Each structure stands twice: as structure tokens, then as C-alpha cells.
Length: 435
Image (cartoon, rainbow, N blue to C red; front, side, top):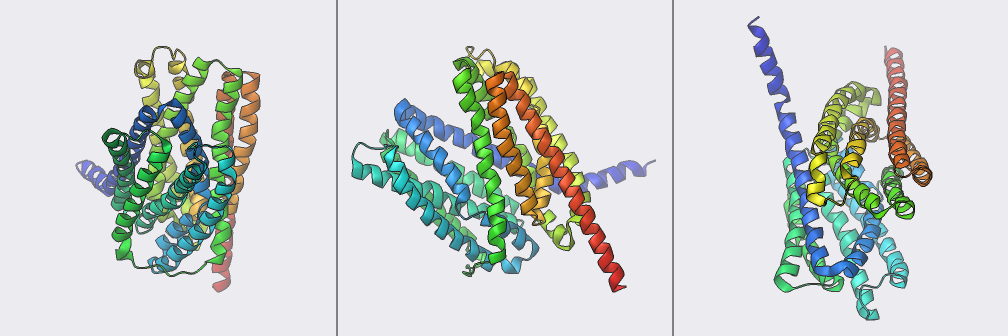
């Protein structure tokens, strides 16, 4: 009997590096999110309602555009480089070319469309210059800076990836504090200059940091273009689904319900980071395991699913337990905040379940299936949420969210397991033919 504790201690030591890596990964994402909230709080206080409202509307547009910038090529950098580090120069060059081409198109479109309905300055010339500076910063520079995290993950340098995430977040917070608190910046036009300068500085520091991996080799990897686009599209459709509920509630619900629901949505969306932190760690390993067939990732994915369920459950329980204290933080007038939190908190468990399956599909290069699942779920989900919210707000909203996330869980795992069975049969047939 004495050997049992020793065996358990050995298993604990085996998983300890993964546990510590996950703690660092999730901690970096939570820290970065907290810094982003501080940045927004500073800007909101100094801009005032009108200027900050315009700024939020502008950043909402660029947050969608940044997913289009690069056409999803950042995913293939992680997947292909994780499988073979020697391919890094070509994959980096592939990313930089697609970022340059797509950003030129996006910025041109933005300069044609945005000045017609967004005014950042009453002076037409200043307005155009501000819009251009904001587009370059929020699309091109952000995409290039975020590429650093993907490069580190591709090389399994998770500590450096975490540092890049936190460093970028702190740099933006520091820039906002210095600009507003130190120099009295109070308009979007003034902030655009500070924001641009801060992003350029971060980009230069990260470029120097990444020099050890070698320079890019400028080549287009044609077979990855379609996969990259398929990888990027779910983020766009998900953004639509994540906003249609707020839009419909704004039409049919009271201000208190809208405010409480908006706060809860922010909290639950932040809780997804605990799931994202796990996926960042396992993606390179899944990519390597899938090189000889997607059936090789199923057993590992099932183990990851258990971890994901545990992480999701802990996040959901934490929100449930802390729900009574939320009105103290956000205001007693939000009378629905506690009940809404306790209703919606369990969604993170469903998200953790389908995220494991879709990450496995992505790591195996099955982006067509991954995109079909997520895009269909998001498009149909947006329609269902809009109808259910109009029919029975907000109960219909909650019901439709659980139906959507549950449907994605079922679809994702059915597709993964079927592809794995097909891959296993092909592998066994190939082995028999060779013998």
C-alpha cells in the first residue's frame, strides 16, 4: 500500500508543468482583460459621453476588421510551425504579405465609407487624418502586434506569449494614463496620435524581441489561403450573434434589463478566457498529433474535454457564488443583475465543451468543417436570438443562448468523431496495403 502515494505523487509531478503553464496562460489573459477595462475607464472619464460613444462605435468596426486583416493566416503559422519549426520564415512571410494586402483593402474601404457617417472632428481634413490614423493603428498595427503571441505559441514559448499579451495591454493602459492624466487629452483626435505612437513603440520592441527566430521569407502559401479565410469567418459571424441580443433588448426591454444583461454578458464573455487559456496551450500539441491523421487527436481531445469541463464548471460556480455581490459593485438599481448572472453563468460549460472539439478540428487543418459548424451556429443563432428576444424578453434570450451553444456542442463532437473514424479506417487500410 505504501507505493500508492508515491504513484500519485509521480502523476502529480507529471501534470504539474501543464498546471503551471495553464495558470500562467489564464493569468495573463485575465490581467490583460483587466488592463483593457482600466484603459476604457480612463478614456470614458476624460472623453465624455459623446466622444467616448463615437470612439466605441469606431473600435467596434475595427474589431471586426482586424479579424479580416491577414485573412486568418495567423492560424496556419501556429499549426504549421508547431509541426515543423524550419517552415517558420516562409509562414511569417506568408502572414506579412496577406496582412499588407488585406489591410490596404480594408483601410481604403474605411476611408471611403466611414467619413460619411462618423465625425471624429468638425474639421474635414482633421477628421480624415484621424480616421486614417485610427484605421492604421486598430487594424494593421494591432494585427502585427498580436502576431507576436502566435509566433511564441508556435514555438511553444508560452511564457513569452503571456508576456507579449500582458505587455501590450499594459502599454495601452500606460499610454491612456499618460495622455489623459498627464497631458489632459480629452478628444478622440488627440488620443489617435497617442495611440498610434504607443502601438508603433510596442511593435518595434516586439520585432526586436522576435529577431532570434530569423527573418521572413516572402512567399505565398496558396493552399493555406482558403483555410485561413475559413478560420477567420467564424469570428465575424460570432461578433454578429453576440450583438443581436443587445440590439433587440434595446427595442423591447426596459433600461434596467438592458443594463443588467449588458453587465452579465461582459462578465460571462470574460469567463471564456479561462477556456481560451487552455486552448492556447494544447493547440500546438494537437497540431503535431494530427500530422498522421485526425484520429490521433481524439483520445487527447477527450482528456482535454475533462479539463475543459472542470475549468468551465469552476468559472460558472464562481459567477454563481459572487452574483449577490455584483449589485454592490455596479449599483443597487441593477435589480436583475443577480438573477441574470445565475441564469447565464452555466453557458461557459457548454462553450468549453464545443471549444475542445473545434480546436481539434482546426489543429488538424479541418477548417471547412470547423467553419461550417461555427458559422451555421452563429447565423442561425443570431436569427433565433432575435426572434426569441422579441417574443419573450429576456427569458427567450436566455433560452435561445443555451439552445445555440448546446447545438454547437452536439454538432462539433459528431463531426470530430466521424472524421476520426474515417481517418482511422483509412490509416488501417493503408497499413494493410503496405503489409
